[in-house]
Image (cartoon, rainbow, N blue to C red; front, side, top):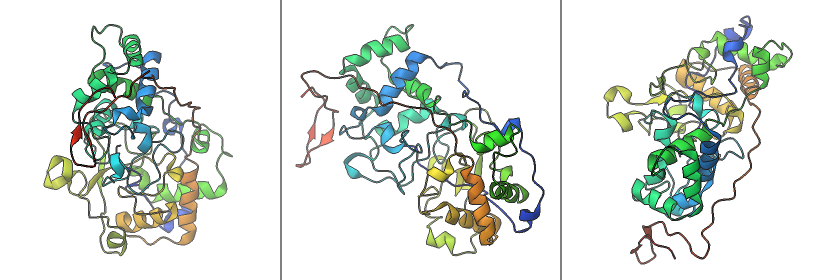
Length: 364
């Protein structure tokens, strides 16, 4: 459940920017059809299919109710449209789930960038006590091995491994599936490729406002989340930067100390990974705590907290329109039929009972 939504980290804008000349987009801004692949985990059809099944399988959680898709719903915007995500037994996490769409173009994962890769990120929620709640990764693999249909799928996905059902291979498979979750051909992409009519006049003006204020110095690159960096090297910004406004208290923007929680480095207090602008119109509510309900309010908040600007409403409207042009085309994804357990039910090993005791892993 990586944890979520828009920081929008230097979002936007000055009044003077509205009259700035449009800086032409180019091919470098177009999102590729294929994501980068690490040498240690090249994408294959078999891995993607296995990863898709695992991604949708709630049996990887301790009470059998939460899957990766529960919080990062690929049938919509790649998250859950909640302020914070809900894990096992209805527990609420502390941050909102970031979108999984185009996450393969991020150089680090989670809001605080603590996971250096999709593979590393895939392992985290499985044992988080609030999210999927498994005791440890051995317990996860015990469940997977207890489901007969997975053995053949792991063998096909990792044919050179003598014992392919491992936590590393599980993570590689999920990451491979996630590397297919790309939304190309937004109207902005078409504009970047030379179609001057792909954007409306209002969207073009919003692009001018964002560029003219220097917002794209942070929200740059194909994912509008910063420059291309080596995997494991994150692009972070402080949020909030300016605190002389009512938004910081109103939306509890300093309650969470950001990257500091992961690194314990004082320099990382309130530092956050710059999030993507792609598909941002679909991923409300906004910011790491999901405290802002609408995109227009998120623009106002970012202008004030990051630039110390109060934007005219016409500028807010224009920027919101531009951000809407970054919604891409979503691939058709069908939900998989998960491997069955004929005649028995998998028990995920440490599910608390009403009396406070635990049930141990077994077939029921």
